[in-house]
Length: 212
View (cartoon, rainbow, N blue to C red):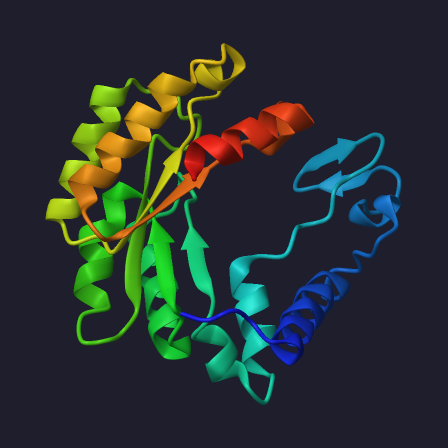
Protein backbone atom coordinates (compact mmCIF):
# COMPACT_ATOMS: atom_id res chain seq x y z
CA UNK A 1 0.00 0.00 0.00
CA UNK A 2 1.07 3.61 -0.54
CA UNK A 3 -0.26 7.05 0.38
CA UNK A 4 -2.57 8.83 -2.05
CA UNK A 5 -0.89 11.48 -4.16
CA UNK A 6 -2.33 14.97 -4.61
CA UNK A 7 -4.14 14.15 -7.88
CA UNK A 8 -5.74 11.05 -6.38
CA UNK A 9 -6.90 12.95 -3.31
CA UNK A 10 -8.50 15.59 -5.54
CA UNK A 11 -10.26 12.96 -7.68
CA UNK A 12 -11.68 11.21 -4.61
CA UNK A 13 -12.79 14.49 -3.04
CA UNK A 14 -14.47 15.51 -6.30
CA UNK A 15 -16.22 12.15 -6.49
CA UNK A 16 -17.60 12.59 -2.97
CA UNK A 17 -18.79 16.13 -3.77
CA UNK A 18 -20.41 14.99 -7.03
CA UNK A 19 -22.12 12.10 -5.22
CA UNK A 20 -23.80 14.50 -2.80
CA UNK A 21 -24.46 17.09 -5.50
CA UNK A 22 -26.52 14.52 -7.40
CA UNK A 23 -28.89 14.49 -4.43
CA UNK A 24 -28.90 18.28 -4.23
CA UNK A 25 -26.87 18.24 -1.02
CA UNK A 26 -24.31 21.00 -0.51
CA UNK A 27 -22.44 22.59 2.40
CA UNK A 28 -25.70 24.34 3.30
CA UNK A 29 -27.11 22.30 6.20
CA UNK A 30 -30.66 22.94 4.97
CA UNK A 31 -29.90 21.16 1.69
CA UNK A 32 -30.35 17.73 3.33
CA UNK A 33 -34.08 18.43 3.60
CA UNK A 34 -36.84 18.29 1.02
CA UNK A 35 -39.48 20.99 0.93
CA UNK A 36 -41.45 21.73 4.09
CA UNK A 37 -43.98 18.98 4.80
CA UNK A 38 -45.32 16.66 2.15
CA UNK A 39 -46.20 13.07 1.45
CA UNK A 40 -43.94 10.17 2.37
CA UNK A 41 -45.45 6.93 1.08
CA UNK A 42 -49.07 7.00 2.09
CA UNK A 43 -48.53 9.42 4.98
CA UNK A 44 -48.66 13.17 5.17
CA UNK A 45 -45.92 14.70 7.30
CA UNK A 46 -45.36 18.07 8.88
CA UNK A 47 -42.00 19.78 9.14
CA UNK A 48 -38.83 18.96 7.28
CA UNK A 49 -38.30 15.71 5.39
CA UNK A 50 -34.75 14.42 4.99
CA UNK A 51 -33.58 13.58 1.50
CA UNK A 52 -32.39 10.09 0.68
CA UNK A 53 -28.68 10.07 1.41
CA UNK A 54 -26.08 8.95 -1.16
CA UNK A 55 -24.90 5.35 -0.94
CA UNK A 56 -21.57 3.63 -1.49
CA UNK A 57 -22.97 2.43 -4.81
CA UNK A 58 -23.55 6.05 -5.85
CA UNK A 59 -19.96 6.91 -4.95
CA UNK A 60 -18.62 3.84 -6.76
CA UNK A 61 -20.53 4.76 -9.92
CA UNK A 62 -19.14 8.30 -9.98
CA UNK A 63 -15.63 7.15 -9.08
CA UNK A 64 -15.78 4.70 -11.99
CA UNK A 65 -16.27 7.62 -14.38
CA UNK A 66 -12.84 9.03 -13.55
CA UNK A 67 -10.04 8.35 -16.04
CA UNK A 68 -7.83 6.76 -13.39
CA UNK A 69 -10.70 5.03 -11.57
CA UNK A 70 -9.05 1.61 -11.48
CA UNK A 71 -5.89 2.97 -9.91
CA UNK A 72 -7.90 4.99 -7.40
CA UNK A 73 -10.02 1.99 -6.49
CA UNK A 74 -6.91 -0.08 -5.78
CA UNK A 75 -6.13 2.33 -2.92
CA UNK A 76 -9.58 2.36 -1.31
CA UNK A 77 -10.95 0.18 1.48
CA UNK A 78 -14.54 -0.52 0.38
CA UNK A 79 -16.72 -0.89 3.49
CA UNK A 80 -20.21 -2.22 4.12
CA UNK A 81 -21.14 -2.81 7.77
CA UNK A 82 -24.88 -2.38 7.28
CA UNK A 83 -26.49 -4.58 9.94
CA UNK A 84 -29.64 -5.23 7.89
CA UNK A 85 -28.02 -6.04 4.56
CA UNK A 86 -29.27 -9.22 2.88
CA UNK A 87 -27.05 -11.88 1.37
CA UNK A 88 -28.05 -10.91 -2.17
CA UNK A 89 -27.19 -7.26 -1.44
CA UNK A 90 -23.84 -8.30 0.00
CA UNK A 91 -23.12 -10.38 -3.10
CA UNK A 92 -23.83 -7.31 -5.22
CA UNK A 93 -21.49 -5.23 -3.04
CA UNK A 94 -18.70 -7.80 -3.28
CA UNK A 95 -19.06 -8.20 -7.04
CA UNK A 96 -18.77 -4.42 -7.41
CA UNK A 97 -15.62 -4.54 -5.30
CA UNK A 98 -14.30 -7.25 -7.61
CA UNK A 99 -15.20 -5.26 -10.70
CA UNK A 100 -13.47 -2.11 -9.44
CA UNK A 101 -10.56 -4.03 -7.86
CA UNK A 102 -10.63 -2.14 -4.57
CA UNK A 103 -7.69 -2.51 -2.22
CA UNK A 104 -9.86 -4.28 0.34
CA UNK A 105 -13.39 -4.80 1.56
CA UNK A 106 -14.52 -4.49 5.17
CA UNK A 107 -17.55 -6.59 6.09
CA UNK A 108 -19.18 -7.90 9.24
CA UNK A 109 -18.07 -11.31 10.58
CA UNK A 110 -21.32 -12.76 9.20
CA UNK A 111 -20.17 -12.24 5.62
CA UNK A 112 -16.44 -12.99 5.87
CA UNK A 113 -16.78 -16.49 4.38
CA UNK A 114 -18.90 -15.17 1.51
CA UNK A 115 -16.37 -12.42 0.84
CA UNK A 116 -13.48 -14.89 0.78
CA UNK A 117 -15.42 -17.08 -1.64
CA UNK A 118 -16.43 -14.33 -4.08
CA UNK A 119 -13.05 -12.57 -4.00
CA UNK A 120 -10.98 -15.73 -4.32
CA UNK A 121 -8.33 -15.36 -7.01
CA UNK A 122 -8.16 -11.57 -6.67
CA UNK A 123 -5.71 -9.36 -4.77
CA UNK A 124 -8.55 -7.78 -2.78
CA UNK A 125 -8.02 -8.19 0.95
CA UNK A 126 -10.90 -9.08 3.26
CA UNK A 127 -11.19 -7.08 6.48
CA UNK A 128 -13.62 -7.41 9.35
CA UNK A 129 -14.45 -5.92 12.73
CA UNK A 130 -14.07 -6.85 16.38
CA UNK A 131 -16.36 -5.34 19.02
CA UNK A 132 -18.27 -3.33 16.44
CA UNK A 133 -19.94 -0.90 16.84
CA UNK A 134 -19.65 -0.01 20.55
CA UNK A 135 -16.50 -1.77 21.68
CA UNK A 136 -17.72 -2.62 25.16
CA UNK A 137 -17.31 -6.40 24.93
CA UNK A 138 -14.82 -7.77 27.43
CA UNK A 139 -11.29 -8.57 26.34
CA UNK A 140 -11.89 -12.34 26.32
CA UNK A 141 -14.79 -11.94 23.88
CA UNK A 142 -12.73 -9.75 21.57
CA UNK A 143 -9.84 -12.20 21.60
CA UNK A 144 -12.23 -15.06 20.76
CA UNK A 145 -13.62 -13.00 17.89
CA UNK A 146 -10.11 -12.27 16.62
CA UNK A 147 -9.24 -15.98 16.69
CA UNK A 148 -12.41 -16.90 14.81
CA UNK A 149 -11.87 -14.26 12.13
CA UNK A 150 -8.23 -15.22 11.78
CA UNK A 151 -9.20 -18.84 11.21
CA UNK A 152 -11.62 -17.71 8.48
CA UNK A 153 -8.76 -16.03 6.67
CA UNK A 154 -9.39 -12.37 7.42
CA UNK A 155 -6.50 -10.21 6.18
CA UNK A 156 -7.11 -6.98 8.13
CA UNK A 157 -8.78 -6.40 11.49
CA UNK A 158 -10.50 -3.37 12.99
CA UNK A 159 -11.14 -3.40 16.74
CA UNK A 160 -13.34 -0.81 18.43
CA UNK A 161 -11.70 0.72 21.49
CA UNK A 162 -13.50 0.30 24.82
CA UNK A 163 -14.55 3.88 25.56
CA UNK A 164 -15.49 3.04 29.16
CA UNK A 165 -11.92 1.93 29.85
CA UNK A 166 -10.64 5.11 28.21
CA UNK A 167 -12.96 7.38 30.20
CA UNK A 168 -11.85 5.64 33.41
CA UNK A 169 -8.21 6.00 32.34
CA UNK A 170 -7.68 2.24 32.49
CA UNK A 171 -4.91 2.45 29.93
CA UNK A 172 -3.26 -0.77 31.08
CA UNK A 173 -6.43 -2.72 30.26
CA UNK A 174 -6.67 -1.10 26.83
CA UNK A 175 -3.02 -1.76 26.02
CA UNK A 176 -3.32 -5.35 27.23
CA UNK A 177 -6.42 -5.89 25.07
CA UNK A 178 -4.78 -4.54 21.92
CA UNK A 179 -1.58 -6.49 22.61
CA UNK A 180 -3.41 -9.80 23.04
CA UNK A 181 -5.43 -9.32 19.87
CA UNK A 182 -2.26 -8.49 17.94
CA UNK A 183 -0.63 -11.65 19.28
CA UNK A 184 -3.57 -13.67 17.94
CA UNK A 185 -3.44 -12.23 14.41
CA UNK A 186 0.35 -12.11 14.09
CA UNK A 187 1.74 -9.82 11.40
CA UNK A 188 -1.66 -9.02 9.89
CA UNK A 189 -2.89 -5.43 10.01
CA UNK A 190 -4.79 -4.32 13.13
CA UNK A 191 -6.57 -0.97 13.13
CA UNK A 192 -7.98 0.57 16.31
CA UNK A 193 -11.32 2.37 15.85
CA UNK A 194 -11.96 5.31 18.17
CA UNK A 195 -15.35 7.01 18.62
CA UNK A 196 -13.97 10.54 18.54
CA UNK A 197 -17.34 12.28 18.92
CA UNK A 198 -17.63 10.84 22.42
CA UNK A 199 -14.20 12.09 23.50
CA UNK A 200 -12.56 15.27 24.66
CA UNK A 201 -9.39 16.33 22.86
CA UNK A 202 -7.09 15.07 25.62
CA UNK A 203 -8.90 11.70 25.55
CA UNK A 204 -8.37 11.45 21.80
CA UNK A 205 -4.67 12.05 22.35
CA UNK A 206 -4.53 9.39 25.06
CA UNK A 207 -6.41 6.93 22.86
CA UNK A 208 -3.90 7.50 20.06
CA UNK A 209 -1.01 6.84 22.45
CA UNK A 210 -2.62 3.62 23.64
CA UNK A 211 -3.11 2.44 20.06
CA UNK A 212 0.52 3.06 19.02
